[in-house]
Length: 209
Image (tube, rainbow, N blue to C red):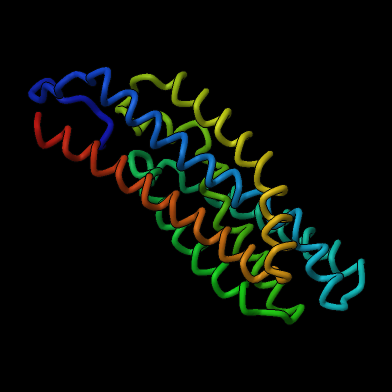
């Protein structure tokens, strides 16, 4: 398995600079993820009401988001042993799907499209939630797990706190929710870029060994 240590491979130690850079990249990734994860739950009810749908419809779509999210998390947990060592790659794939989903949602106004959006978002957020702690073990090959997890928790809180206020400002300035969904897609895009950099850094360290 990728995380198993071989006695014939001596990986170079992490320098102080590399630790700072990795923690910084991880903080940016999770801050964007916190923004993109919590924002749909805040804007979807208001968005549907503004489109002329009933309040009960707004409640139902959030229920779909949560229910399918639980299913996605359970599925990711069941296959967790098969993707051990590749959780970052799984998050990369899931974030790509979520980026595409939010771009499509920016140009969709039907209630059916909103249900599909919630179902897709909930399912592909499952791998992220299921591997919430385990992914920190992969970033630096089992080292600095606690500081990486602390960085994750703090950055997620920052993204979740700033996100709704920023989304409201975007909505007030643009007058539509299209820019809000595109901003969510951009945040997932930043998460993809940051995760890709962490994967490449890990592979480069392995090649140097």
